[in-house]
Image (tube, rainbow, N blue to C red):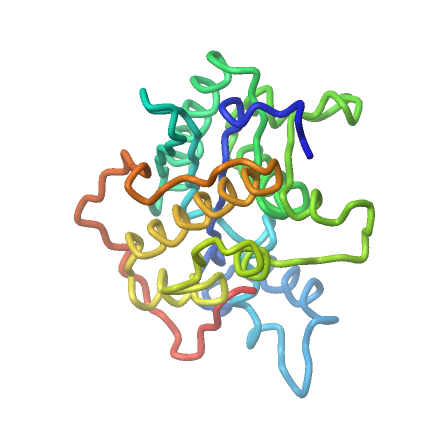
Length: 260
């Protein structure tokens, strides 16, 4: 499977997103109204749009990116596969997006690049592109899909590959890592907890570590799809630098909910 894909040409990535504000009542009146319209069909059992505002993080129009982790495969002198990670993260979304754009551009200049994520075609890739446009940042060529034919788009999606044409199928990364015997990236937190870890615990470094685990798991999964050896833990490294970091000190409502 995927014999034409060289793993060394793939930049693996994952993003973590949260709502733009910790609480619905901090939104301006227009944004409140727009979220009420968006959320109306999602409310259940007496919930209000304010109650489920924590889910705003999954929509690029109402959320923001707090971490993009990326990694690539290379080979050691003994030909063992190795993996190097780097994360762009912080409260300043425009800065992390610019930093990520530089990472993509540098990698793309050296490789016939493909971007790979799990459910990337429906979430990560469009979310990044939309937030770049909102923040006035030029799209890297690989994300600018306008006018391209399907075979000209340089995206790989490990969830789509698992479908084998079955478009009803949604299989989580957690399930696939389990059945392929890959260590789970969900051993600390999962996506549903990211908003509370960011807004309540103010522990962005914990989110970054979780995001990097997801990226490694995606790379391991692609290697298994190709019938190749997976990467040993001792051959994984990260160049991410963690500084003393806290999110902005803003009032947080006690009822904040995590996104999906």
